Image (tube, rainbow, N blue to C red; front, side, top):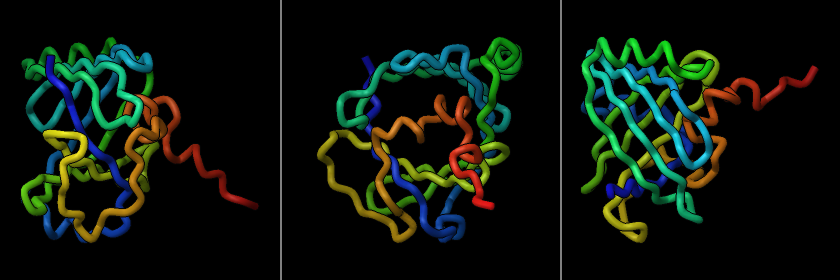
Length: 161
């Protein structure tokens, strides 16, 4: 069984853009977004992926993850089966020390949200913190993509009149 161990942070500056060694547009939908059992379809550039994720542990740092690349046309067909709501984002890859941070800049209904994730080998593994990292939000379900497709970031903040 494959375990995904990661920490997630809000991003406080756009300095990651200049530091990125790669970026790609990602569109994803959920065939199932039940908490603890998500099935995701993702299109990244010209590649398709099917991912199944299990429930997070108590800290939100670790969970089961199974992912396979699938043909692009199959990913496009599976997108039609997805629940309402899509995640649209640009992912930047930024190397810092021994780790690569995935910085997601959201578009559409989640415009204005930027988060960074770092995958670890162990929950207690130390890592360098790049200057663009802000508040840690690991385990906060509001920042899970499966939550954002149901409760987009733009709906969180109602402007005062």
